Amino acid sequence: MRQQSASIWMVSREYGDLAGAGGVKDVARQLAEALATQAGSPVRVALPLYGFIKPQEYGFILLDEPRFPGQPLQFIVDMNYGTEEREECCRVWWRQEERVHLYLIEADRFREKHGVYTYGDGRGHYDYFAMNVLLQKSALELMIILGEKPDVIHCHDGHTALIPALIHQCPGWRGYFRETGCLVTIHNAGIGYHQEVDDLPFAQAITGLPWREITTCRLAGKFDPFLSAGRHAVVNTVSENYARELQETDADVLTDWLGHTLLQNGVRLEGITNGICPELFDPSKPEQMEIAAAFSPGDEGDTELAGKKTCKIDLLNAVAADTPLEDTRQYGSAQPWPEAPLFTFVGRLGEQKGVDVLLAAMPDLLRRHPNAQLLILGSGSDECEKRVKFLTEEEGIRGRVCYLRGYNPKVANKLYAAGDFFLIPSRYEPCGLTDYIAQLFGNIPLVHHVGGLVKVIDGETGLAYQGNTPDNLLACLERAMVLYGNQGDMRRIQIQAVRLIFEKYTWNVVMKQYLRLYEQAKERRLRRLVA
View 1 (cartoon, one colour):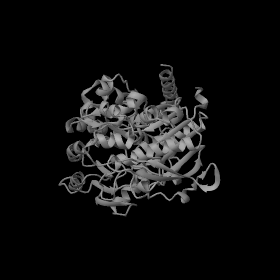
View 2 (cartoon, rainbow, N blue to C red):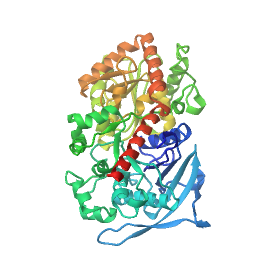
View 3 (cartoon, rainbow, N blue to C red):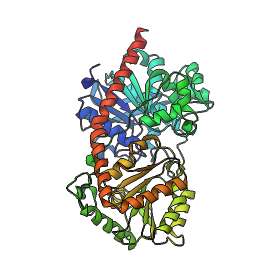
View 4 (cartoon, rainbow, N blue to C red):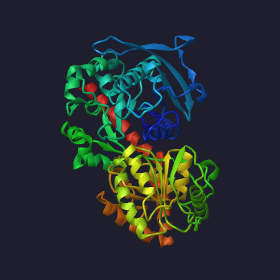
């Protein structure tokens, strides 16, 4: 397989601005576009047409039946429940973007969903496993209809991790995809992210996989797609250190010992740290970023970062005046103090993100330093949100803690641009994207040194601490206060952080590592054919 011409199909539940709930959407889109535009690889991506997507508004057109131009393509997918024979009808919408061919698979099961993974009340979809199976089977059928025999199918997360088993063990697909390799990327191996199912007869019936596959690939008694993927594909995680943690440390307990089980099965996880497109987070273009002024954290010539201070004043004035910010509700306030250190947090409010540790450490820091302030943007569990709201009213720090409940990317950019320090006290973090974004905005990340967050080099591109306890976080916060008093060191870290991103972590660089894994996936498949 020649790397520059490898044909790639990606299958994902998320993609860019079309459908997203986490970092998968960014990886899928940005990697696909880098492969297509920089490596010259033919890239096609299949994902569901959810009810919230209006395909025509995005420029999609209904795909025609190849044999009958002008007649919309329709095909049937077998979805046997075991106790009930079922068939589901699919249509396909298509458009090309940045040389990537995008396919939205339309089916009633997808169209009735108005969230990628959850209903409006936050509950996960009751038919999550059937949704995943329908996506995978329909994507394979679409490839056959279009006459596509890709070199590699890249499967994103547990939602698509059964594709390797399907094309290796199911008649029809096995012959057609006999030379197609598979790569499965684990974006998050945490408990609750595996897409496992405990009804084994149902899993066998709806997938059509052999009973031996179902019973062999059990984790904690449940059929686990990641274990199945390990039998038939190359498997990677989204950072080298996360792969190491899963297979060499007790941190794997947070996955129900998935990493260790894979290792016992002879599967060594690969690790590739996610990249980023710096042009999507460029504060030198304030109109595009929708921030108050331009500045360039990576430019030595921008010595004072005056534009960043303007952004800080703009945001602090807004929250001090309780000015409504898009898609958010404000609790607490902040003072319009541009010279005071501003700590920021953007993300999901929950234990995985270490918000409990943050809430335990910050009051002490704020009491010790009456000029320090904290801005939080995000939403999460009721209990976590309640604790954040309580913090905004705590005696001695009231008026210096502001919680913006909700999320809007424009508001997020304002926090990235205004902040001096960006807090990431995650309990575990497969890769991390917000540290990149913060660095590109000159907002120095302060991280718990786990998983992919080890890419933040302590004292060089950010600040880091070991052991996620309130005391350890507080010690790191105190280091940040000392650093804030030395603006020369602040600028050194800001400049080095941006430079390292451009040297190691743009998608044009990271993409080359994926080409290597695609080569491995293809070679693995061909070896099995010979055997």
